[in-house]
Image 1 (cartoon, rainbow, N blue to C red):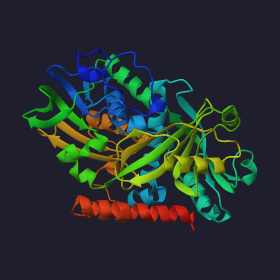
Image 2: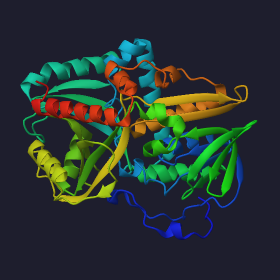
Image 3: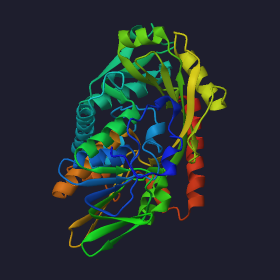
Image 4: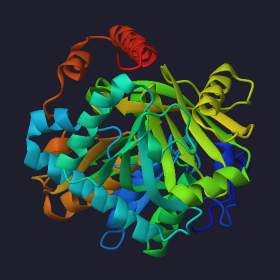
Length: 448
């Protein structure tokens, strides 16, 4: 990226998850003058940068980020790119039909594979392999079999495994759905690589450049960034946890749930590295802990995420003695036959989850449909890649085959619809806490 003007703010610490730290060879570029472009993207997280990458070959793109790249949800994530872990396929099919559900899965898989090609990261930064969705109780077989049949119905490569295939490395596992074509990525390397691609194509990525507000004047949008202005034909807003600061995102915020999650990374284990080589299993979910996940890293580390809490708390580094971190490490130790190494890195991360698991995409047209205002909210990196593909197509042709599924006006499940109707933040907060309490009871009951 281009070097920026002298600024004391550029020298402040880079607040991303400690495990994802890399050396930045090029310093942040700060907006220091008025500028014109075709597309201005507010928000430099993985969603904004995926959209910028999808557009930069054909459009002059400018991205403005209020802090440094990765300081939002992206830089505190676990980096898993599982295809459908957040999608209830039966619910999507009920609302949109089987054909639309197949289209969603096709474009989601396609966007992940295109991003893999675009980033061209080495195997230590982009993992490809299989993941396991395991059942730790015999009584969970029917539920897991239903999950397996649903995935196979929609053409997802899956296999139903019995304990004989699993007992070498995992303890008390009865059955598992083996999912092929799974991926995981180093989120900061992905973000910086996309930013470099945008600048290589002639675009601009500005950090420490907070968008204060915007307006539409005749044929252009005007985005105010401090004392400077960005004039653009199209405006895309992908600000994630900063939705409160943009009034046009109020309706999207009403159907999102703020969540704080915990993540740990162990020290290196040669036994874990050998297990990964033997099984090619890069991730795992457990029916007894529905909201936990495990990622196996190539160097023999184990990343575990979960212990979610309702509400957005500051992203912060933790230690292995923090109670949620200790609890997750104990769970991981009980799950594996191999000795789980001690915790070396730990942190708490906040994100805003769409209530039905799918991204929200809001489109407004100005100036006789010549100027697009697009707002996007999502959970997880795979959907961020998908939004890049969809928004890129929308700005080129005005349509995309799955735009209706992602539209903020789409039909919602009853619980998400009820959430959107609650008249105040206080009532929605109570509803969030009640939903989390119900999830924990379900978790503790283990699908009973």
